[in-house]
Image 1 (cartoon, rainbow, N blue to C red):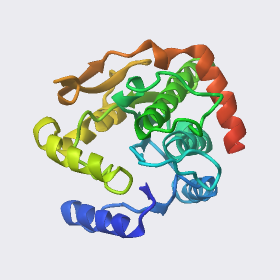
Image 2 (cartoon, rainbow, N blue to C red):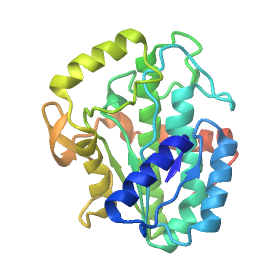
Image 3 (spheres, one colour):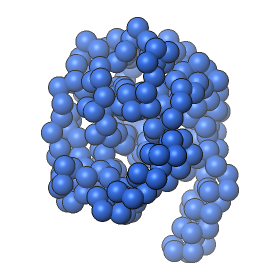
Length: 265
């Protein structure tokens, strides 16, 4: 595990060892996706201590940040964590994953198509007209656009890495606990009782994408019932905005510049 919170990581390890036995091989590396230096150090440690990576599941995120906040690297916080941090991590670990013919699974969100449906290249940080929702939607659009571009590059280069994208639907997690406005926290706490599924069920799409042999490129897998919020896992329709190849190429180049990491399969 690569996590920001030491306490939560220790608790998770204890739970896993209790369930699977003390011999369970589970450990964590501290990493804060909001700090690119932290991502670099975590990846360096992983490369030293983890000889094989069969699957990298990128499921960290922040959402609905009430007021504009900036990372130490100068990014709007949601874009920094949800996209730039993962872009750098995937680039640093890609070769190790390919050595194992492994997989990368990125957890997106249907919010990608519920905002402006484009990357604001002229105002990435929403310095003008910031809203929590539009900034979050852009961060997930950027994240998913990057992954579909990565899929295309991997296939063109003939690399032995599977790249998959999924979404968790509406799941009862603590995603909004530390970032959302008081109103949105209360609103979600009420409506989630009626429209959301458990956090465990929300994790099923990423587990499927990491293990299922018959998954395809340029697909989005997630719950398929009740507006794709809950239900059986399957293929979900993609909005054309996330498959914009010109924007994806531009975003890739920009991401390399912003993270100081030039890479391509």
